[in-house]
Image 1 (cartoon, chains in turn yellow, brown, red, green):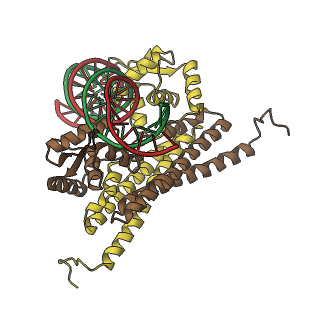
Image 2: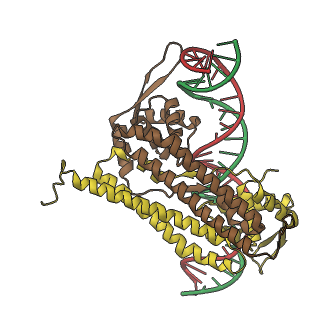
Image 3: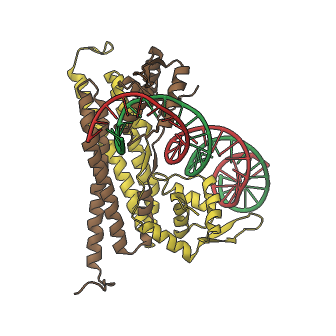
Length: 193
Length: 193
DNA sequence: GAAGGCATGTAAATCGTTACATGATTTA
DNA sequence: TAAATCATGTAACGATTTACATGCCTTC
């Protein structure tokens, strides 16, 4: 039976205290979604697979009429997670960033539209950085008080990375702006001299 | 007919001078693979789709016995690419980074293994940054002389981003190291005092 | 009492990679 | 002459998302 990163994501979330599939998905949305998104339709089959493999156990945790399962890592689950964390081969990150593809082809645009595109991309990165800082880091800091330091570390790394990209694009924006102002070949007819 | 980022990637590569499907794939591997990887099995069907949509034209370009097709963007293709570059809605980047998932769960490891993990991740980012600087930026700089500035800009952004991540992890490494040395509660039995 | 969140799953569709299949040409 | 590269495609597989289907519980 083959375990993949999503398997370990589910396993790890159990270790951090999530019990139901729903709770795992909710926790992941508030912590790991920026570097490994996961949908509910992945969580439930994965939990079944992990149970089959003896890495987690399931018990009933229904509240009245509302059905709920509570999962718990087994000792073997813990050991398997540790072995994965220690294993030397780490798959390279897979990125699909439409924004960078556009920027890559931006030579096709006139200077004004190039500037506008860069402006939008900078805004995107800034927004994500702020989102992580306001929505994710506070939660991670709470976990920090329960001897969990790395969720906060990763959140800060993610936020700083996006902020760095925003700064970089801000600099590019200024450079492009300066170049546009320095080349009056095609003056904007809507602007008065 | 729905056009996706891979469609525009193929279209854009044609614009940058690639003619055959094989050449498009090769160019993409040396320029866009870090933010939008693409396999040959995507390129050929995509070219057929683009031809059907009237955005590219195909002509035979065989050398002796070796079959080859040469594709060219049509005027409609150019306009479609421009419209996409200008369109305001940009899908957020999709990232799947196993390294960050491991780091996120690193609290499960003893301090020494945490340090080792961070060291490996820093090395990864450093390697990618160097790879971009030695393999991709020189090529992009060549294109720079043909009025194509953005391939080089994007390559530099990518490299700087990875280098920033490597620095950040290097700092974390030092912090962890300092903490390990400052807490002699669990001395390493293999080390002599 | 209506809306929204809690809770669990399955089915279909989509997207992408790897493997397969073939053969010419160039380079070491 | 063997290996690498050029060149084009298809088929099978795997991973992930969206949509479907259902119903309880809590809050406004």
